[in-house]
Figure 1 (tube, rainbow, N blue to C red):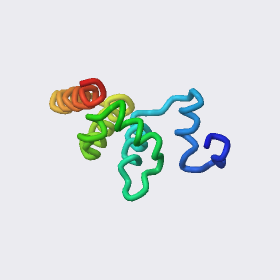
Figure 2 (cartoon, rainbow, N blue to C red):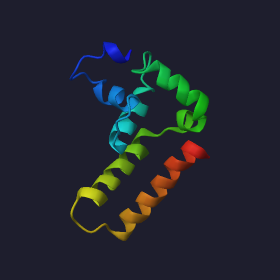
Figure 3 (spheres, rainbow, N blue to C red):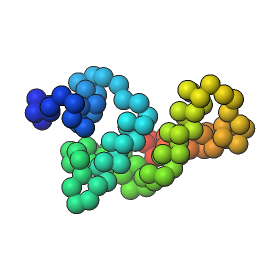
Figure 4 (cartoon, rainbow, N blue to C red):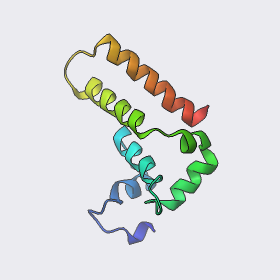
Length: 104
């Protein structure tokens, strides 16, 4: 599979991750969302792995919450402006939600 990926393809970032590169939170969310595409997930092996090793993440995934987490994290990290107390609290709650899905 790794050798079959053409440069510039939509799979390139995930394949680079498999070879040791890093993914941003947004890229991770995109890949997890891709495992939920029916009838054909983008990466069936990743879907199977998530179902076996991160069952709650697989069963309780909420793309809207994940997208909101990424938006808040991005604006807090790269926005150049102050984060409101309400946004900081929501960012914390969404972060706990995601970590709980991964490890809870």
